[in-house]
Amino acid sequence: MTKEKFFSAIMVGGYISLGAMTYLMIPNAMVGSLFFATGIFLVFNFNNMLFTRVCPLTAATGEYNFMDWLCAWIGNAIGAFLVATLAHFSRFEGKIAERLQSVGQLKLDDNFISLTIMGFFCAVLVSYAVLVGKKYKTGSFPQIFLVWLFITAFVFCGFDHIVANMYYLSAYTWAFGADPLKIIISLVAVTLGNAIGGLFIGSLEKKHVPSQPI
Picture 1: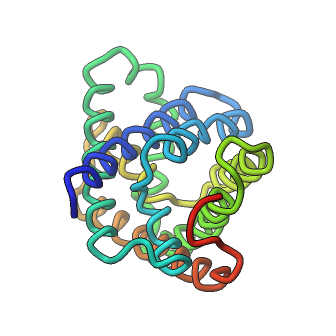
Picture 2 (picture 1 turned 90 degrees about the vertical axis):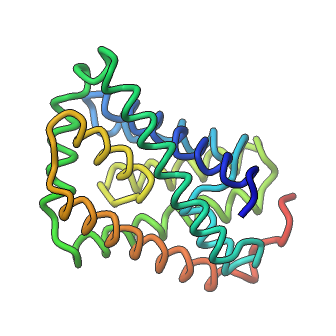
């Protein structure tokens, strides 16, 4: 774990949180899902230590390892918590309070198996977005379109992304309070689903992914 990777992971947690905040601001779920990808494109272009990026690439290219997983998870959590904290002490929280309550309560009331499966489905789509990001040149039309398509699909379906959930649950706790045990269960389950899905797709599509970005 290097300082550069850890700082990158923190920044990524913030980027995904900005995408989640944008999603919560837009009343229409379809439109909100389209704009959630804002955070993903920031990840692709500036910092790469996103937990759900590290997992599939561990299997597909071998460029990451378990310590990178740990670095990404902790850094992403810190970044998401920091953004949620800043938002709490601003007028922004009031703008998203109603939708935040609905989204946060849904995730906290779900059971472990359901959360794990929803995390797995999310990881399948995000992993393909990551692999497409490796396969095509950064900023090219195929990369932008396909990544946007996969990310929009997982958000619209309501699948669980661990870093987005880190923000949602942090923001929900600041605004409404939450049972710590429910938060832990939710984070563990979604992490497990994201990790399994990422490793599965990374291993399945290994032969189609260049070891270095084009």
